[in-house]
Length: 126
Image (tube, rainbow, N blue to C red; front, side, top):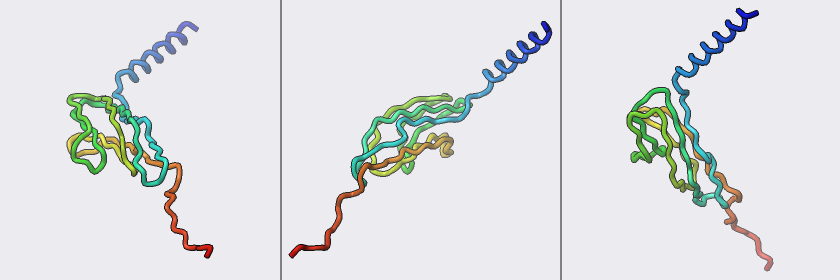
């Protein structure tokens, strides 16, 4: 009985030591990931928070897809945070890059409450 408990304790300690030394998983969280405008085609405004982590240290930059200017850059890091004011009428993708290589991507979706109210009426009473 004593030897079984000791074996379980050693196994549990070994698993804990192995998981604590393993590198962090790749991930990027964007909050909120959806922006809602009142009407279709209107610009949506929100405050976005980005948190990312990678398994290895390096030089990384955060971009909006299609932009050549980074929102933020980090040197010799494996995780980072950034907040910015988002304004767009279409869905946009955030990219975390190392040089020209895209490592992580997350989309900020732009949705609307109502369709456009501009409808042409082709009928008359008189």
